[in-house]
Amino acid sequence: NAGVTQTPKFQVLKTGQSMTLQCAQDMNHNSMYWYRQDPGMGLRLIYYSASEGTTDKGEVPNGYNVSRLNKREFSLRLESAAPSQTSVYFCASNTGNNEKLFFGSGTQLSVL
Amino acid sequence: GENVEQHPSTLSVQEGDSAVIKCTYSDSASNYFPWYKQELGKGPQLIIDIRSNVGEKKDQRIAVTLNKTAKHFSLHITETQPEDSAVYFCAARKADSWGKLQFGAGTQVVVTP
Image (cartoon, rainbow over all chains, first blue to last red; front, side, top):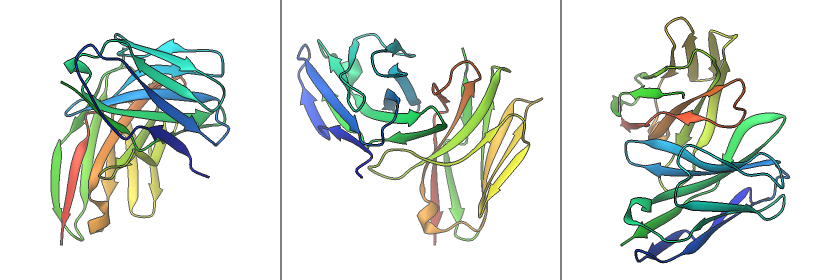
C-alpha cells in the first residue's frame, strides 16, 4: 500500500517548456488535490477534483491545467513554464468520510 | 476568502520544554482546523484536528485549543523531543468548502538536546 505516489521527484525546466506532473493514489479516495509550497507562504491549492470526472480551480490556478484520468490518477500540466512556477508541488487525496489529507512526497520543480 | 496567519515562523526549544504555535483565521464561517507536520523531504502529515464545536482536544503530548470568539487556535506540544523537529502548518476550512484547506505559512520547530 504505497499511498500517494508522485513522479518525478525533481525536475528542471527552461522557461517556455511544458511538462506534466503525475499523481496516483491506491487508497480508493474520491477526492484529489494539487498544492504548491513556497517559502513563507504555506501550501496553496492549485486545482482539485472532488470526484472522478470533475475538476475545479483552487486559489492559484493560472498557468496550470489538470486531468482526472480515472479514480486513481490526477495529473497537473504546465503548458509554458515560467520562473514564477518554481516551487515544490504536492498531490493529496482524501475520501468523503474523512477530511484527513494524505500527501505525496512532492515534486521539486525549478524553472530557469 | 479565508486568511490564516501563523506565528512564530521559527521556534527553537530545549528538549523537554513545551512549544506553542498560534494561528488566527479571518472567516467566522470556518469550522474545521487541522494541524499538519512536515518532516524534511516529505509531504505534510495530519497530527491533530479540531472542529468548531469543541474547545480543546488532546492526543498524548499534543493538544489543540480553539477560541471561536477571538478566531484563533493554538498547537501545544509538551515534553518536546528531537523527533518533534519539523515544520508545522495550521489550516482552516469553511463548512461549505469540504476538503479545501487554507494553510498558514508554517512554523519551523527545532528541538535542541
